[in-house]
Each structure stands twice: as structure tokens, then as C-alpha cells.
Image: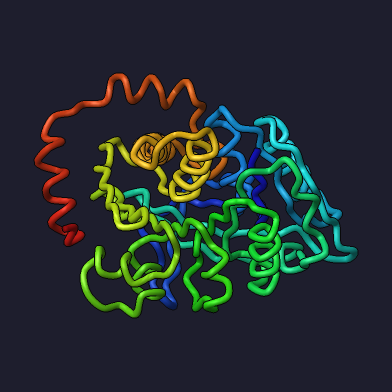
Length: 311
């Protein structure tokens, strides 16, 4: 059983030909709202991946923005532990998506900033705690230390990027980052493999966009190439990766298997608009992997390993 503790937002999404530069006004197109927030996205992705019961600790306001978030999570079977701070609005995110599917995001944390150490529910029966950095950093550290003491595996998606204390990193069993976050934490020196080796966590996964992903598990390195799909919107793809990865690991699969499942789920998430609305079901991932082209996979894998500087 997995507990995800983190942010939940209502996303306000507008399509535009390109993301505005500072001082620029761009005439956009379609506008939609979606349930989002890194924590909620990852909880929903974990639940949809199947094989593991998923709980989520989140904070929401007493407003209309909370309802679609709760409905989205409950529809996926996520058990909610909801904190409702008085007089604070539900978190929101304002997202511009360009014609290539890339995005720019501004987050107003709202109730997410009110999560505190005392809000952590009982940890009995749980195997994994999944965290991100869209709630207060002292709260993240308190949750990680409590979970470590209770014998859970602690997974931290260190996003958005920021400096982390040695105490927090010491409580993390698996760190998940993108390349920019990896270099921030590792001091931006050397190859991807050298940066992975420099971090003190027992296992680290780095996502490398269209190239794929690389993991260090102890002294062993794994590489997984990406799946090529028509990209509509990349919002939530990284969160889908994290949720699917933890679901696979909590189901006792190997790291190599988990990386492949997570990569496929993240690829499918890029083919639809929105964050939680784009997270695929387990059956869709299985069907996709059955049909996924293996053409040039060996060549792509060699290029990935060379780029990352893998031994």
C-alpha cells in the first residue's frame, strides 16, 4: 500500500501558438480546467497503474475548486486523507501549452502550504511513501523521517528543484529527478552517471526527456529508452512516470521493469490534454507495450548510455 503526501491544485490551461516571453501578450485558443498538482497527479497515476492500494494526504480549501480534484482522485480509487485549513483557497496552477506540447506553469499553493508534520496519518500497513516539493520543505522532511522510522521505503520526486538538506536525503530510499534537478543536487559536475553516483541515496532515477531515463540502484545502472508518440501536452507526464514507477516497485517488480512501465505510461500521458485527465489506465499501458515498436531500440539504447556516460 502506497501513501502519497503532497500538493493538489485545480489547473487552468490555455493553448497558445507559443509561450509568451516577458512583457508579451499572446492570443490563445482553447481554455479548460483540469484536476492537477504534483502530489494528486502522482497518486492518481499510482492508483491507475494497478496492483497497489493508494492513499493520499492532501490539503484543500472550502471552495468550489476542491470538488473536481476530490472527484478525480476518488474515481481512480484513491483513499483521501484531506486537511481543510480555514479561510485558505484550494491551490491553483495557471498553465500555457504551446503548439509543440511544451508548457509554462505558475502555481499558487493556497491550502498546499498549510500541510504540517502533525497531519501525517498512521503509517501501519504502508510499504511506500511518495513525496514531492510543492508543499513546505520542513513538512516533507518530517514526513520522510517519520516514514523512515516506521520502516517504509521513502520515494522523493525532488521537483520543483531546490536545495535539500543532508538529513532529508539520508531519509530517502529512492530519489526521482529530471536532468536539471539532478545537476542542481549533484553540483552540476560531470556526466549524468557521475552525478547519479555523487548523490547519497541508495537509488536514484533521472528522466531525460525524449532520450529516456537512467537509474542507479546501488552500484548497478539501468537505462530505458523513451517511447515515441504524437505529443499533445507534456503536462503531468513526469508525475505519471513517478506514480507508475512507485506502483510497480510496490508490487515487487524489478527496477528495470518499473522503468519500462513508467516510461510507457508517461509517453501515453503526452498524447492527451491535461494532467490527471491524461493518465492512462493499466490496460492501456499493457496494450501499448504489446504494440510498441522495437525498431532501432538497440541503437537508441546505446545512444542513451553514451549520453549518460554509463560505465
